[in-house]
Length: 229
Ligand SMILES: C[S@@+](CC[C@H](N)C(=O)[O-])C[C@H]1O[C@@H](n2cnc3c(N)ncnc32)[C@H](O)[C@@H]1O
Image (cartoon, rainbow, N blue to C red):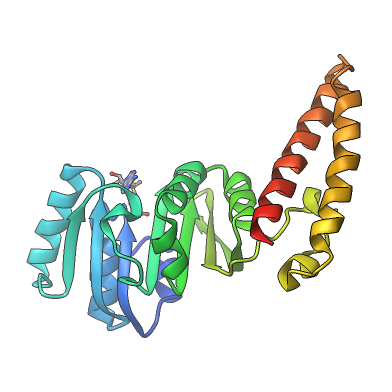
């Protein structure tokens, strides 16, 4: 079976895994390929729609892999238990949908050793989400398929929010160490930011509004870091 270059790039990165969960499997191309190659011992092929699951079941049966690949109908990671899959693939969906899927079942997201994400759009928003939520992006690749470029990200949950560039007011290492003075620094920064927000709320220009939105985002980030430390 020949995979598309996009799926091949994902498949080539998966070796010696116990259980693959392919979320939004559609035709189950990836699990069938990986089981045949011996790169994963078992697989769970999931989809939110009955049509793709039925197609997947037909293909799994045709390849006599019913013992190795289980299909599950349902949204995102809700069909998995934490630690059930050591490798999770969520490919061929929008970046925001991928973020929603990770967020909806955080215990499952946190428990995977590696998660492969292939957003079709909104990759910047997905990256911002990942960094903010404490996922580490361990690798990225670009794949060309016909005239189109696809992005693939390998991530895992690290547990430490990693600030996007606009959130570098607080040193990432301080957050990582849960530095004992971090609470104090956060209070100081929050007070200073509130003063700026108060002033910007009186400004009516477009640039002022843009700056205000940035400050409100930063405020939200400070609040998340406060909860974390
Ligand atoms: C474009 S296909 C991608 C198939 C395959 N993963 C790939 O990359 O080639 C997207 C698949 O995701 C499924 N899907 C969409 N939202 C989903 C969700 N929340 N949970 C599980 N599957 C979903 C769709 O039914 C569809 O089969």
